[in-house]
Length: 202
Image 1 (tube, rainbow, N blue to C red):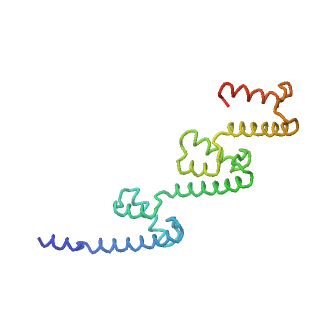
Image 2 (image 1 turned 90 degrees about the vertical axis):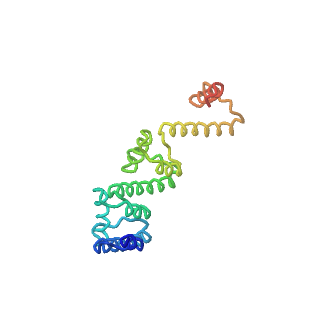
Image 3 (image 1 turned 90 degrees about the horizontal axis):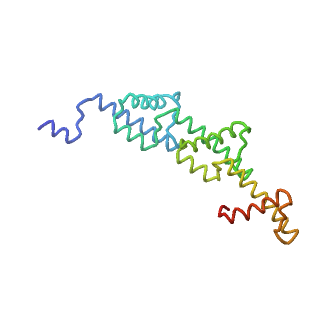
């Protein structure tokens, strides 16, 4: 009965447990302030007591020794449980920013594979997407800047547009689009457009 009464008012049966909870809450509050300032919880391990504490939370959770209440609290402020995941995300974001700059300059995201790390990264995104290994958030981000998932489709579209521009110039000069079939590639292309439309494939 007395135990129940003391429990009702939040009596702490262990002075050490109470001190630990108070200390944990203090660090959590510091981390919340850090997150508000920096936009993340990536405190460098070398950054004094706070860095050590953040590292310890990851270690304890990995060992299954961090209680769920604390895990939930850390999740609410976007705590990252994997340093490697953080590093990978940061690297991806860096390449994404480079790609947006490329897109602004060239109007597309078709970075040649031979063009260093960005070209290789673009190719990796296509491969990962093809295998279903690219998370939806990244897919959405790339779609936002007009990323082309198929190099062949992009090349075909570019080729078609080139022929269309040539046909527009022909029409301006001759007053019609009646390019003779024997007139090289342009004549063949015009013939193919008619054929594809007839088959319902244009």
